[in-house]
Amino acid sequence: MKAFMYDQHYGYQLAEIEVADANNLPPYTTIVAPDPTKSYQKFNGTEWVGGMDNATFQQQVAASIAQQQANIKPSEGQQLLMAQQAKITQLQKSVMEQEASMTQMQKMIMTQQATITELKKGSN
Image 1 (cartoon, rainbow, N blue to C red):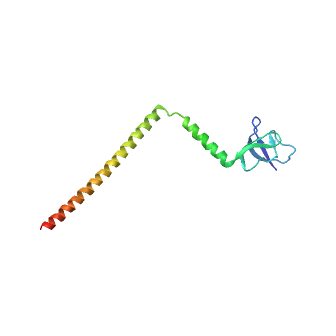
Image 2 (spheres, rainbow, N blue to C red; image 1 turned 135 degrees about the horizontal axis):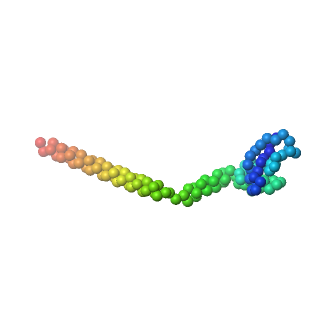
Image 3 (cartoon, rainbow, N blue to C red; image 1 turned 90 degrees about the horizontal axis):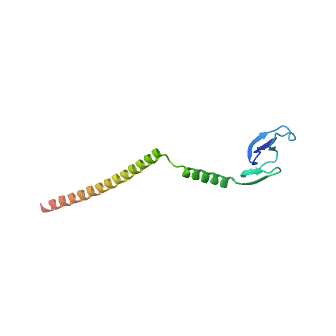
């Protein structure tokens, strides 16, 4: 038979276990099943209370992780590396812009050469 272990201080579910006798449960264990559509429920001694649907729980976990990562201050070396990476990115952007300008100039020169060639043919 299934039983559900919960934290002795806060009541949150710790594990799902199999027991042979419902009258002889380990401490902080119940045979009352939590709602399978909810996460983060607490056992209050008689029933599972609170909790939230799994999608909301996953969103809150993701938001919490994002907040913790935002609070982590990079070391001086990491800050220097990030600054160098930003400079490299800016240089790469500049090179791409210059290559685009060069391509445009080459197109203009080719157009002018074609015009000159046509003019020479017309004057002969």
